[in-house]
Image (cartoon, rainbow, N blue to C red):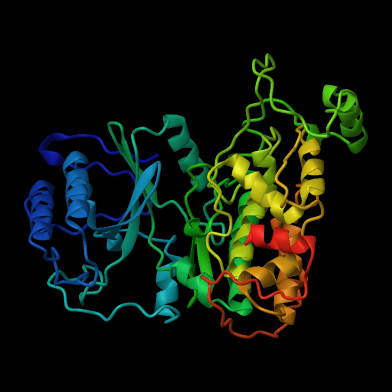
Length: 485
């Protein structure tokens, strides 16, 4: 990992790849004065070394103070990057958009997006005159943007090292955000990543047609196929971690802060990893099977249960966790990422975001049981050596088909042939049994990608509507339908 270290006169020690070329002499006598001039220029609201190139980006005063604090506490960073705005903030890190001032002094093989811009696939902002010329071209300098990810000091050093090592191992993988370099000063770590222009998912799920969903999912699954081939679990697949550009029809998978190698945290083998006859034997010999509740449901839980609680990795985002994560499976595989992809596809088809909006794991399992029914949920729980019980009367035993669920959610009477094809892919992704769930490689060979049906119409519903659009169903199904909606 590259590093910063303090040096006399504010010298900024930077270690990068061997493709470094010596920078052109600065017009300032030292980098300390250069950085101070840059900070002063931004405080005055002007672009150091150029005109107001980012004037379309409004920066809050609190964000401006935050960026100034980063520059003041991280020696030398202002000489290499010009912080522009804060573009993301999470539990473990903050991401800033910045201009790579010394971009022209490196061989930037990672910058596939710049080559795409040269092919006019993504029309960039109109060029403006700058007072600082490019040392290589002699003409106006084209700004090159990167994303600076400041990892909080509260993060474990092992977690930080793991994220950087995984990004390094995934270099060259298509649709995976590459790691350019990383710096450390004392207890602060900053990772430098490419900046990728993308659209907001809150617009995509309202406007995407099935053809757009196909491009989106193909790019996402291509990234996951590369990640899973390295036996790496991303563990946090969600729309905000996949930056999609609808003009390029490409996206990049980001944020590997929760990623890990498969099997790295196995504490003990889960029951789901055994053969079917072994699982059946253990279930039949369990205390619950030999002493079933007299009324069919237990009256509660033991007050002082002496048995040790099961511990398993529950990393991820609410609404996107796979059922085996909720059931505390200790043998989690890359299939947990494919469930999250299924949730994204369900969000796009159902035109509702977020589709699952649970407060905790118990609510999440109730949401799943409203779709799959209690019978399948009990089977899934038993697969992991758990017991699923509920006394909610509106939750049926059989559940519903994905086609009916998509029609209810999107408020349409019938699905087009292309939507039906996407729904069949959805069924393979959102499978309760992880061994039967599609892998990324298998999903890319699905008919939805290899033999697409081009029967697409623009969706004209209202995503805020709660009407089901179903009138022919009656009886017990109506109660479950109302509870679900």
